[in-house]
Image (cartoon, rainbow, N blue to C red; front, side):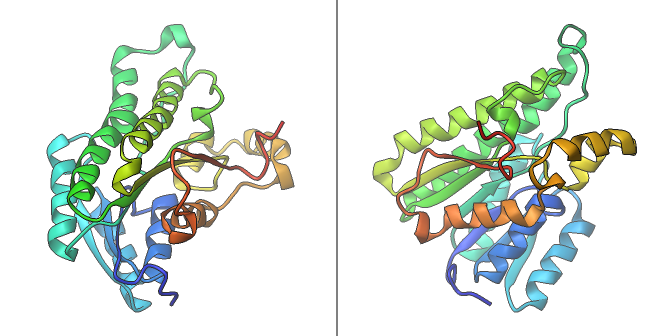
Length: 253
């Protein structure tokens, strides 16, 4: 086990599966105590067990990102359980239902924005409040390629992800002199359960997508985990307000 994060506490939302799971595991491997935040206690328990089996320290913290009270309690419980909070990876999110812009419902728009943008705003507020009273810290928000380029028929998802980049930049500016760094990651097409659900079982759709990707393959959750953990590390001590694209060159131009 690497000890680059020994003595540090990392919080990961949406940590029971996909990118969140991979990031929680990597934090554990690097020596951090990990708050594994998720709605599903069964899947989250598997992540906690895997971290502990490798010699790390972790605990499950249940939270629904649609509930402001859960978000406040998530940070408070992390600090109480581990004695602090040094790194936060705000990763939890949902897919939007695809439909032409003029056919999207207000209810669906509000659902996606609530989970993908408003909840992250609240996470950041509570994380920053703790970090201001401590020695600082690092926040990384998991965004999307849709934070940089539009995703047709997903105006709600696109708007929320564009907004995430703005939140990170504002916070990075405001707290630069308080030893708090804030950055964003924009993953490309990553092979996660969420992506699989979005693509469905149509082999033709999947093959067409793969044909457009560099290397003709999707990225892996571990690719994003390594970027998130690096941004939280001392090696990235002068990186703040940045948007890191991790997409294998898909958006290169």
